[in-house]
Image 1 (cartoon, rainbow, N blue to C red):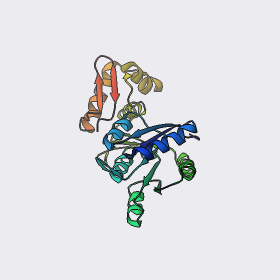
Image 2 (tube, rainbow, N blue to C red; image 1 turned 60 degrees about the horizontal axis):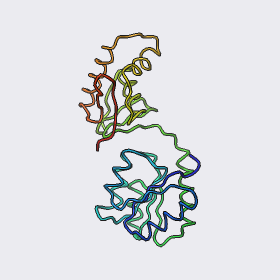
Image 3 (cartoon, rainbow, N blue to C red; image 1 turned 180 degrees about the vertical axis):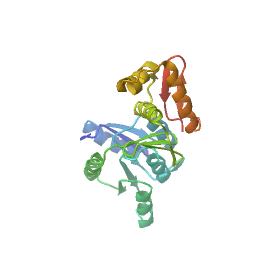
Image 4 (tube, helix red, strand yellow; image 1 turned 45 degrees about the vertical axis):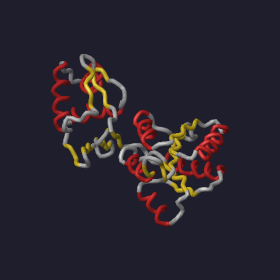
Length: 226
């Protein structure tokens, strides 16, 4: 991800939002503006942009709360605050909630662009190693799974099943695909009931999460619901 392809901009000031949108679109970037925090949240659950710009004062809440919400789900999504709040305490709070940079209004669009590119250079060096779905976190480096921040001990088939579904979040994975990928790939040929039993145990250990859905007679899908 060496170039910015899509920017989400959370800003209720129409004039500022339009100026930022026009500037970056002239540089061939796609910019989506959200005038409310809830609109941005709904969009983020379905699509992850390259970077997100957030104003602090919004009609339906504060940008730092949105920043914190994002960080519980996407550890590496680059976030920059664009705000009139220039006092030290607000800047510190913004970074504590997970922002990568903090730009005070008024700002130069050229300098904003440079700072965005700098944030992305740093972000690109961090390897994506965690997967998220609602309150479930899967850490691929540690081969560990957490539910509400508490570790859940899974068997190898249960872990592989969850990993496959989370790597394909938002897509339905067929039972045939799961059997072939998790069991047949290791030479352990099993019947269809093995998948049913493994899924049942996985659901129980994760407290029957609503984000893990059964597509009857076809397969399974994981998707964010919060």
